[in-house]
Length: 394
Image (tube, rainbow, N blue to C red; front, side, top):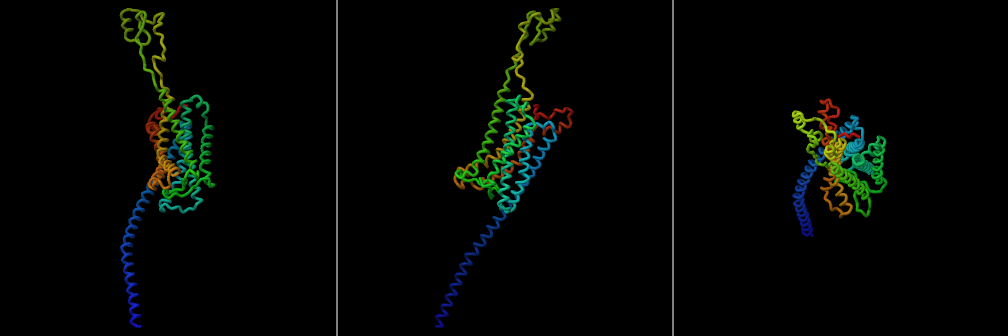
């Protein structure tokens, strides 16, 4: 009896010991390996977070400083108190508001590890504000190209109808349209959610059958297409009207060797020295010419300045939409493509390109506008018109 009990206790102790040893052997290398991986992942995540915070901080500073500079330059200079600079102020205010009110929340989310900790209501409100500012900026760029199209193609109509109150009404109308597009998701028509890959609250793009975000994406794409189409129309019109007929200089003609009129040269002096009569003949039908055919077409100064303005705003528009096209592409793929067909890396990159638009757009305008380049020369020049080639005359 005693021997059987002792044998059972010994076998139980040996089994427990073997199980403990196996468990310890299995756990030790796994725990050490897991700790090393965890440390590496944490260090990589920290370095990535630091880089994102620094880059986003630079974007915010550039967006605030650049847009304030553009707004101040337009407001402080009376020569800019004309369209399309009213719409430029609207676009700069939208980008400035996005840099001040929206991107700091993205910065806080990135610093916390791409986690939203402010509640669903705050996320919905922030997504609405972000969408409103983005769409109002796009509508302002469209208003600019419409104004340029009227100023160049229908210049007389533009000079008569383009007044300050009308431009203010167009700006307010653009804000109302932006509000109408971005506000319905607040009441459930669409979905505003926090997206960890983007580190922001925005539209959660779903399948087109749900029809949550397809309408906004189509409207935004329509604004882009219409804007670029009008720029193409403008540049085609300018190209056709800049074609100049070659200058044709006719040889000197005369019926009594006086050689007056177009093409006259030193032959008049030679005739005078030789005692020949000097002066226009009584009848010179051969000298009567069509001056429009001989001198060619003169390019209007107003047209040249409007062309410069169109080129400047075209560069700004292309810069903005180039940064937004990758994001629109991933939105269309999410709506019409397969679920999870886009990598999270592409979503992150496309979202950060849209963040950079706030800081890049104002500086693109500044460096493409000759009035900013020549401001220093303008201070040292007595000519009040010098350095303002980008300012329209109408």
